Amino acid sequence: MKTFRQSLTDKVLVFDGAMGTSIQRLQLSAEDFWGKEGCNELLVLSKPDAIRSIHAGFLDVGCDVIETDTFGGTHIVLSDYDLADKVYEINLKAAQLARAVANEFSTAAHPRYVSGSMGPGTRLPSLGHITYRDLYQAYREQASGLIDGGVDVLQVETVQDPLQAKAALNAVFHVLREKRIDLPVMASVTMETTGTMLLGTDMLSALTILEPYPLEVVGLNCGTGPKAMSEHLHTLKAHSHFPISVIPNAGLPHNINGEMVYDLSPPELAHDLSHFISDMGVSIVGGCCGTTSDHLKKVVEQAGRLNPAPRKPVFTAAATSLYSVSSFKQEPRPLIIGERTNANGSKQFREMLLAGDLDGMVGMARDQVAEGAHILDVCVAYVGRDESADMDDYIHRLNS
Image (cartoon, rainbow, N blue to C red; front, side):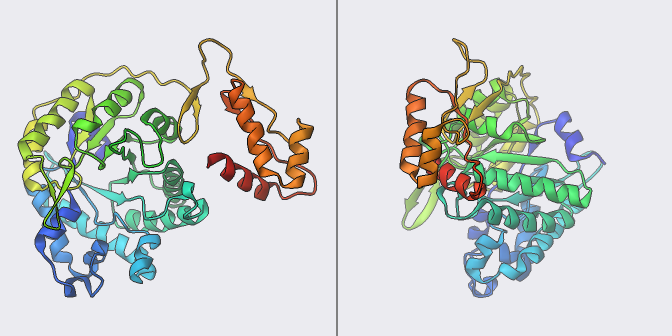
């Protein structure tokens, strides 16, 4: 049987549609959620037949990959339902359930795969909602359950904060090393209607942040319908050496009588995704919020006839902040690095550090940027001080 990696090189892979939308259509009762209504992940324990039927519905229309019901599967989300002690169990069962259904549909001619869904959670580290370390530990626990449950690929999706992506990916690769398992890993960012990620990160900055990781695929999901993704896909087409995935919503949602309604029809979604394959070299397509098995049936029909357009991406090495990229090859040259935010090189900066004058230290950074610095060299090492704490305080202030 071909592996996920082998199939990715042979054909356009079609992922399934929206788990949340599919669950809503079942009109389950509070009892089905064991009284914890809204916790979709719990259904793998409380109502496994419902999740099994959703997986089977997408595989029945020809999807190659089904995603586990674990989008909110970290203890950060599950603790809101008093389920933090069931993180490993939920992720393990979700993966095992999806694995069993995928195995039922798999044939040598058409293997089916399971992707371990890892969503962004409810707290963003760059905004100080949670520490990087706590988020990293949460993703380690989730990844362990998914891997032990038998997923074929791990999918860090709907990334809204670059620091969240780093926490998730570092955790995933750490667990894979610990378990001595080689699984492909995908990362998929969400671009808002503003044209950036939630915190203001543009597509090139996101790619620059993700580029050092040994990823199998980088792409886009959720946020908008396919048309609003076009500009970002042009960036990936030109600069990403990773295969590209695009898993959009069925258009933008409209609130009609208290219900979220998505207006993109199955043929319209299939048409737009076909364009991305033929013209932008996209290798993976699928559906996010609002997409049903009807949508994916049309996508499967269209994608099966197509091959990704050839690409010749050129990645430019660079450093990036949350908001913008500074290429290491500046035109005109040279790349200018501001060195004054360094306690060992600047007496003024060191004195501000010792006085706890963070505003003054930020002011020195701003002055260097105003003078044309592309990158800042920050060093707060000083004998007798807690360098780690000083760096945390200063970097947090610089970021904000």
